[in-house]
Length: 352
Ligand SMILES: C[S@@+](CC[C@H](N)C(=O)[O-])C[C@H]1O[C@@H](n2cnc3c(N)ncnc32)[C@H](O)[C@@H]1O
View 1 (spheres, rainbow, N blue to C red):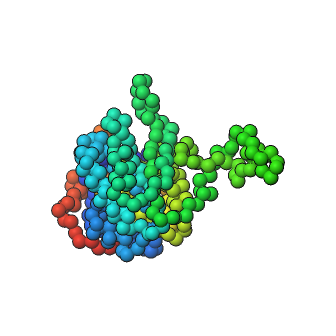
View 2: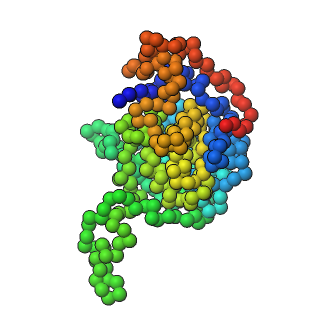
View 3: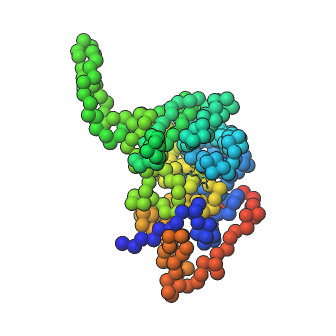
């Protein structure tokens, strides 16, 4: 089988430069779905004018956000400015949500540094917004990282807030895991009943500790090579099913691999999503097109830019992320690469 993965974009600037010319959106532009369901913007989550333009006067019933919280871990932004930045996109989320709606935010906690930014973000929502806390979900990763001197880190935190009183579809909470524990007795109408008799389902509910979701890795069909922070579709499917209805609008301000978009397409919701990086906007658009064409959710053995790379004569990448050219290669990467001028911050307009 052909293997043609592309290296992670965050680690290989040369790959980013190679791919940028193939991205249809420039900063400030929005792609509108020819089928009229979704909108994908190359926009800044913290810029109010961008979000107003994305929403086009509509309100969403669900927001699923997965911001880049490692900005602090790598000291690109101090904690205060990170939280101030969160406040800006949270305000725009509030403005984009309907009166009865749900907000889910994935966030990390750095155990070496006061668990930042998780508690600071929780305080921001508690003190500066009217969102009401609903649940604090932990998703357990199958593999973790750590040392022999501490507990292995295997968790991902997911915060669930609401505005008003949105519907919660409890049936979406049931897992594929059969109930195995008997013996919880309770008297009902004078009869002693056992938990299995009283159950609504043979399977257990996910609850607020999700142990049944596999992390995305390269052998999975949904894997999108080049991405580095892709959430499992199963986790986003669960959120979308639980907190929205078919036909409703869902927003995600940090699209990356377009996971929320793909969940919405499969579950017949509409999605307005953005990413500040044109590459992730292009990947989101292409992932949607691929799903519609052949039902696939990712590029397990290849990558979203396979055709363009092959046209450049590239057959793969070495361990340093440098392209490997076929002997009959058409052209070099540098000859073909055009890095869009970042200062070309265009006005907001739709494109297809
Ligand atoms: C953690 S990833 C999201 C992963 C996504 N949930 C998925 O499943 O693929 C965060 C994304 O946010 C984008 N991003 C960072 N700052 C942004 C901003 N100000 N506005 C919009 N997107 C931003 C990054 O380019 C990155 O792709």
